Amino acid sequence: MYQKTIKLFLQDGDPNERIICELSNWDGIAYKIPKAMLKESKGLKYINNTGVYLLFGEKEEIPYAYVGESENLYDRLIQHLNDDKDFWIECVAFTRKDNSLNKAHIKYIENILYKEAKKAARYEVDNGLTPTQSSLSEYEEAEMKEIIDNIKMLTNALGYKVFSYTEKKKVENKNILYFKTKNFEAKGIITNEGFMVLKGSKVSKILANKSLGKGYKALRMRLEKEKIINENYEFTTDYIFNSSSAAAKIVSGYSCSGPIVWKNKEGKMLKELS
Image (tube, rainbow, N blue to C red; front, side, top):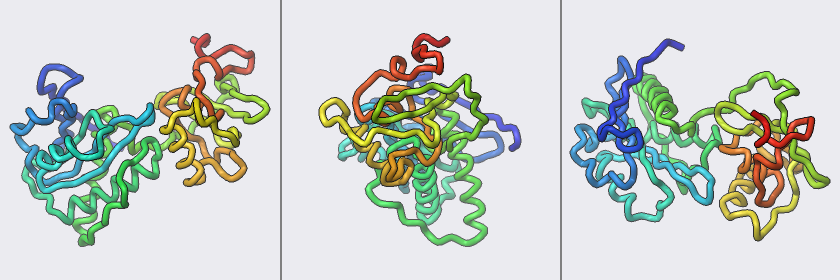
């Protein structure tokens, strides 16, 4: 992969507020806008262009995302202020400065981004239906794939790993953490992207109805539906959670604190390890 230069402009002088993001040698532009600042963003230079966008937030500590497209990004985002997608707290919108994307282009991009987000399984994707993939010429598909790669890169650079797959690395035994009882036995490690539960880990068959939140129950059901957890209640692949506590709740089926329950082979709690 070639080296890239990414330019970040703090529109309000604060990294927690609006950010304009550009990539070297690309005519596209990205806007990261907090929900609370959306109404005052109508004057951003290209925000009324045709493009795609993502909404980011949480439901009961579970990260959620939504992928959308519009022929006027600002107008569509404003509509989301009053619809049923109230989970989101920030949006990231992408367009081209020359406004050369048409409806077929953005429908194609939306479809691929949706599939990539579902495949990565780092966020719950809140789209009710799979976006329709438009038909493009071979030339247009090649152009859109380059745009999609740039969108994924900038999304990651802005702090959202919605398209990031689990990175396969050699796991050293000395770094493995354990969480086990008579009902389950799981192994995990800390990574730069979150807490990874390792393939082959066994989870509890029982979910506590009272202590485990609805968001974690929904996540557990999705992992089972997508065969990430199989019929034998085992992880079929390494899987990254955003925290050790999220991993512990899915493994155990009840509410618990990851820094306390995950331990190394000597029995030291995660919170005791430096």
